[in-house]
Image (cartoon, rainbow, N blue to C red; front, side, top):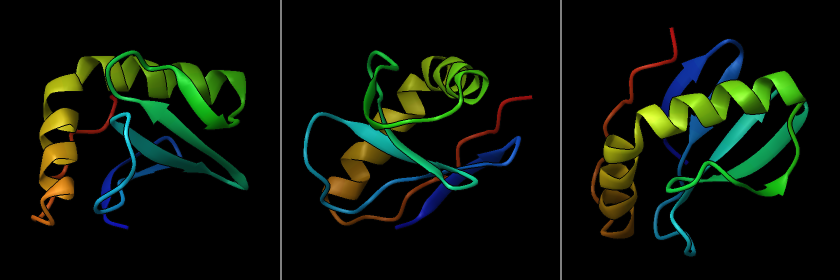
Length: 86
């Protein structure tokens, strides 16, 4: 599962050929979550409220590169890094 970004202790990854809807995976300490790219909605798992807020802000700012990575992952192509939240 390729890492596409890392910020504030959160690691963002995508799986190749993952199931719809378009989403990414987040690890933060022992917490794990799946977040929808289009809406920033929490699909599975949980994150502390502050971490979730930061991830959603980052996702909504980076919707275009995240969707491009989603399409690349579905095709088995290399993924590109996405700028971290600053």
